[in-house]
Amino acid sequence: MRDAVFAGRATVQNVSKYVLMGASSNFGNMFSMAGATLILPFLPMLPIQILLNNLIYNVSEIAIPFDLVDPEVIVRPVKWDIKLIERFMLVFGPVSSIFDFLTFYALLYLFGAGEALFHTGWFIESMTTQTLVVFCIRTRRLFFRSKAGRFLTIMNLGAVALAIILPMASWGRWFGFVAPPPLFYVFLVAATTAYLALVEITKRLFYLLWPAGEHWRRDSLNRKRINNERRVYQGCIVLGMTTAAVTMVAAVMLPKSRVFFNLGANCAVL
Image (tube, rainbow, N blue to C red; front, side):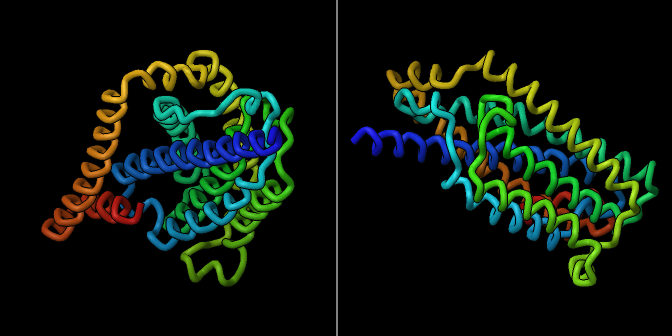
């Protein structure tokens, strides 16, 4: 019975990991996409490349249910904390966007990237950072002090390797990729290392300021507030879908407006 209880708590923890990763990653990517759309004369990433990015990332994350959990997080009953997830998304999403914008700058001004190289560079950087950050987000400890599951490690490192190799392979041209210059990989290593270090610092501060569980215990006595929050989230989803639809219509009606076209196309895909 005791083992079954701990297994159930571990399952909830692993589900929470996926929600935190997915929410922060998607919010950050959308933020970066919207920003890039306003400053670039071309699509920041082709729709087929966005879909490929999501496919590789989501396949790599099927290993999360088999991940190990830290013993201290299953000592007490685990409950959902919607407010914590919201805060996590709003904090860690923009952190990832900082390094997306840094990559944009490097591609445009250091490597003189055209459209194809820009797509390729951001695809590689995006896949590398959002995949490797899993090892930081999955634990409240320093990532190297918490052992990840072997399956999760293999799947995530495999996803990064595929993202790096794909543009150099001949079939990478099917997706519009080109081979980046060798110095780009030096930048990639430096940027990824800096990103993971910043995430670790941010994570430390985040859990000091907002310990998990407090919001749930407070709101468990107020079901009406929880229902109101749910309506707000649903409204945000409807607003996002409406914005994408209106932008796409504007792109059709105003074909010369590149900003509308870029933003509409990417909102529709995301």
